[in-house]
Amino acid sequence: MKKAVCPGSFDPITNGHLDIIKRAAELFDEVTVLVVTNPDKKCAFSPEERCDLIKKATEDIEGVKVDSFSGLLADYVKQNEINAIVKGIRSSSDFEYEFQMALANRSLAPNAETVFITADPQNMYVSSSLIRQIACFGGDVSDFVPKNIVEEIEKRFK
Ligand code: PNS
Image (cartoon, rainbow, N blue to C red; front, side):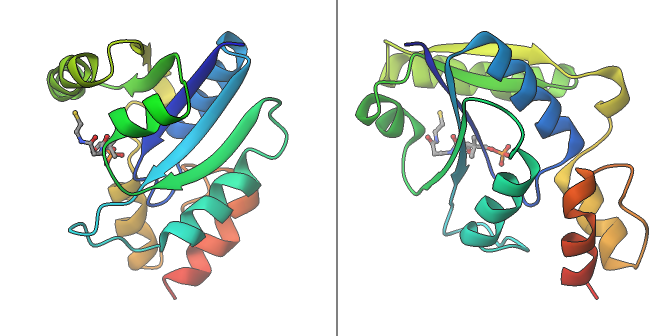
């Protein structure tokens, strides 16, 4: 069984994340969407809220699980015998950052390959921070986040 992990902050999950998760689910038998909690990072949503939003957004995708973890991604990968770390790439700056992380993870967890999936052009400019900013000022986020979580996100910022 080929297992992959899609790690991230997901604060909150976007259409860009959802597209990468769907495409990863076509390539692997099991995909764990992993909310990586960083105690130093101030997030708008708690880890539990972020997991709940992801569960709702991915409920129709077969083979997708949601989990959260506080620690090194390489440790989670080894503990759970995961074969691949899937990352979405939107731009060359994403690549610079992700390439460095991929090399570090390769050294820490040599049995897992990092797999890059290129963003759909439609989602190239979409980010969680953009969504937080729009929602914070009462804007409409429905073009940027999964349809069935729009209300929860907008309500959160009211
Ligand atoms: O959505 P983000 O914030 O860009 O995701 C970054 C994330 C959470 C995937 C990355 O920071 C991470 O893997 N953090 C876990 C700690 C870790 O393993 N750091 C070393 C990476 S080489």
